[in-house]
Length: 215
Image 1 (cartoon, rainbow, N blue to C red):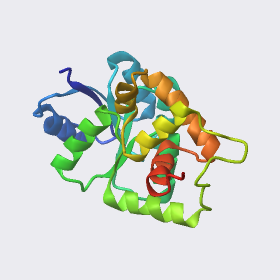
Image 2: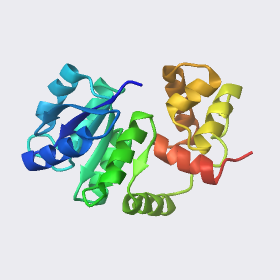
Image 3: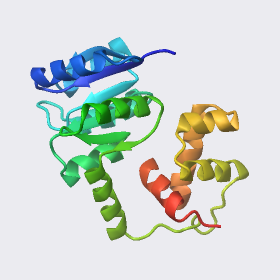
């Protein structure tokens, strides 16, 4: 099996060195590059083609939230995980809305970090417990999305299949394999579901479908 290629993005060299040593001893994980901020990270991604980017939230010149938004637009196949000391809402929700697949705090254990990299490499979403709690609290504060699509918006048979698999926690890659379609097609169905349910991102869609799948 091909190793998961990881790019480290943090303005502190000591942190990058520590992460590199931690990850390089793991089977199936390869650190292919480093960057000290978002400005350095964009050309690094183009040069080393990582599967996963571990991104610090607060950095000079270009912070993690802006970097993730640009990565989502230019390199949508790169799974970005924020690894930060900050659990502030602006960073958490900014990163997730920008396209991050995960948000971890730097007090996580080495096992949690390695597991997150592997899961992100498989297309899964990874959230630290405090971050997940913030997200759930935010969802409870916001108006509930309809349990069925908006009036006049019906799900196609394929969209219903995709929605059902999202509700089980399946990643885009897993859904594609299960339904014998491409990941690109799955992403198109996810975009359609977001529009029909009136939701902003896949994480909210998965939580909504899991807790209120509708008819």
